[in-house]
Structures are given as structure tokens and as C-alpha cells.
Amino acid sequence: MTTPLVPLDRALYRELVRRALAEDLGWGDATTEGTIEEHQRGHGRLLAKQACVIAGLDVAEEAFLQLDPSSTLVRHHDDGAWCPAGTLVAEVTGRARALLTAERTALNFMQRMSGIATVTRRYVEATAGTSLVILDTRKTTPTLRVLEKYAVRAGGGTNHRFALDDGILIKDNHVALAGGVATALERMRSAGLDMSIEVEVRTLDELDVALAAGATRILADNMDLATLSETVRRARGRAQIEVSGGVTLERIPEIAATGADFVSIGALTHSAPAVDLSFKIAPAP
Image (cartoon, rainbow, N blue to C red; front, side, top):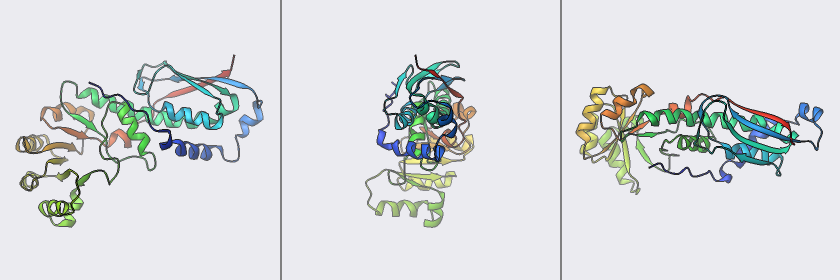
């Protein structure tokens, strides 16, 4: 059963939109102010020019509202919807100057977010018929994590840690500095935090140490298929397995076949291409 997509709280993106508009506007929209009468009203049509999963409509609407609080956006498709090329996604009516000035900011957010949602959907679809869960990572654009992780959810993926304070993940550098997997786990437990502990391993020897130390979630990093399969076998009934490193869309079926529980994919956010959307404006009827 698909989990309903919970909308973002406006407070989480209002300031991001304000800063983006300020960056684009500078001292003023010279072209628009010189060519469009102040009180003219316009009607814009937001179109998908390629097949994609839509994400970011609330953020786009915020861009228009900040420049014209009287503007209205009518959705024909919601975030998370698959839209074939040529789909009319939404329509916006408001002051023509505001529509023109906010257009690029609104599209920049939506094209980025829809790109992430679209890539995520492809990975999720590749897991069909399996129990493998697609996770994102913290490999996000600085200051835009809340939007990019929302876009992952719009594509059907699941969020991993949002920040360093909401999950314990002992990685290779922690292990190296602590002096080994067992020592890192022991120190983490002695910290007394009521949080589950995940530890990264790269070899079967590290796996055995982590399991012996009581780790309940293992991050199997950059393992070949044979090693990963053995990792899953040894951990069965003792720890969940998350796969990371070198994950491509083509590898999802073979990873799922090992019985791994999760796969975390940085490419969902750091490499997703923007989708092609357009916004065509005409005088309001």
C-alpha cells in the first residue's frame, strides 16, 4: 500500500523562495516593468514537455504568491503524479508582471524537484515484486535538503536520515578513527543515546565483528554481488542489510534478489537531471 504524500509545511520553504526571488530580481525586472502595464492580468499554463513525475507545486505557488498574494493556482495533477509529455499540470492567474517575474524561480524549483521524483520513481518501479526499499542520502544541495527529500517521497522513495542528529550511522572514517568496528560500537553504546545503531562494513571480516558486537543494521558498502549475498546470508535474523555504493538502476534487480532490506542511492538527489517544464502566459480572459 502506498503511503500518502504529506505536503510540506509552508514555513519550511517560504524563506527559500524569498531568497531565490531576491537573487533573480535584483533591483527589479527591467524587461517586464518596461513592457507590461502594471494592472494587466495574465493566465499561465504549466506544461510537462517530457514524461515525468511532478513535484514542487506548492513551492512554485509560493513564488507567485510572494509577488502577487491575489494570484491563484489550479492543479490538474498533484505532486507524485506521473504526467506524459504534453500534460497540462496547472494553471495560474494573477498580475501579469508577477507571473513573468516569478516564472523562472517557480520553474527552477519544480524542474529540480520533478527531476528527483522522476529518477526515484524509476528506481522504485525496478523493485516491483520485491521487499527492497529505496532510500535517499544526505548528498543533497546545501540548504535545499528539505525540498529534495520531499521530491524523493513524491517519487515513491523513502527518506534516510535527514540530518546528523536523527540517526546513528558509524561509517568507515568513524571506524578508522575509533580503532575498529567493535570499539566504535562500544563507544556509541556507552554514549547512552536511545537510537538504533547502523554500522558500515566493507568486508565479511568487518561484518562478523559488527554482528558479534550486536549491530542490528549493517550498511554494506561497495560490495560485489557474491560478497553482498554472503553478507545477507550471515546477517539473516540478526541484522537488516542496507546496500550502498556503485548502485545503478540496472543493478536493482540483482540487489533485490540477494534479500537485502534497503538500498541507499545518492544519485537520486546529486545526479538527477532537471525535467523539461514550460510556463506559457497569455492575457487573462
